[in-house]
Length: 111
Image 1 (cartoon, rainbow, N blue to C red):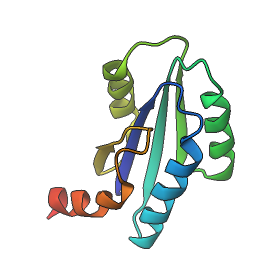
Image 2: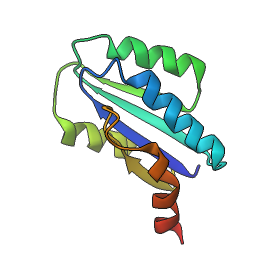
Image 3: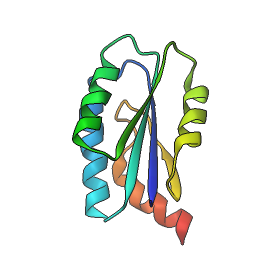
Image 4: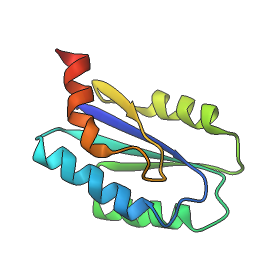
């Protein structure tokens, strides 16, 4: 697998479908094999339900659910432990990180 995208999140239900579609588009356009690992850090909204629906539609999507909020560092730790990609990229769930930058980051690390 080429890339693991780790996305820690807390109450980001609204942005998850758009972020997922954006990542999927970039991966397909660049013929990357990939996984997206969402770490739900104790969200109190319906983020986990959204992640479950996304997993049903795409086997490249995985979710880790914390019972309470442990913080971004703990979420990233568990994401790194679960990642299987040659390159691991972290992204925030709030759409402030652009998935369009993934191909260049991948090339910088692998070339």
